[in-house]
Image 1 (cartoon, each protein chain N blue to C red):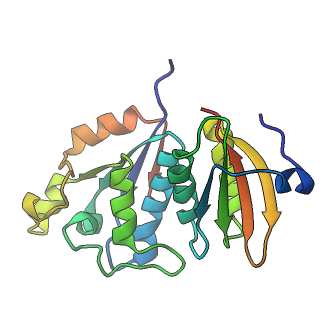
Image 2 (image 1 turned 135 degrees about the vertical axis):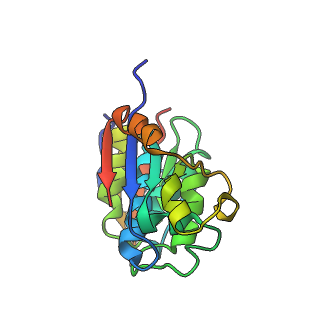
Length: 122
Length: 88
C-alpha cells in the first residue's frame, strides 16, 4: 500500500488576523476528511492560537469560530506542533498550551516537511 | 466512478442518514458529511442538506478523492440536497 499523503501547514499569523489564523484550519479539515494526514506547525504569532483560550475570541466572517474549528481538527487527527523558541520568546510555557500539542524544534519540522507530499504557508 | 442520477432518480433515493448542514459554510458541510457517512452502511446513501452553494462542488471533490459515489444535487426550498453513496 502506498504511504498516505501528508500535508504540512505552517501558521505564522495570530489572533489579530482572524482570517489568516482560521484558513489553515479550514484547509486542515478539508485534508483530514479526505484521508490526507495533517501536521500544523506554528511559528511566530501563530503559537498563540493553540494556547488555552488563545482562540476564544477569534471568529472571521463567514467561517466557524476558530476555537471550535481547532477542536474539530485535533479531534479528527490533525497534529499541532508549536515552535519551541517562538514560545520561549513570548514567555509561553508548555502548560499553557492546549492538551495534545507537541512542541518541536527546527530539525523535527524539517523532517515533517521533507516527508510531506505538500506544504502550505500562512 | 458512480454515475450521477437525474432529478427523477434522485427523488427515488432513500437516504440511510441525513446530515443537516444548513446555515454552515466551508468546511462545515464537509465535516458534517464526513461525520454522517460513518453512520451509513456501505452501499447506502447519505443526504446532506446545505445552504452553501459551494457544498456540491466540495462534496464532489471529496467523493472523487476518497472514493464515495457522488450521486447528484436536488434543489429544495431555499437549500440543496446533496447525495453521496458510501463506497467503503
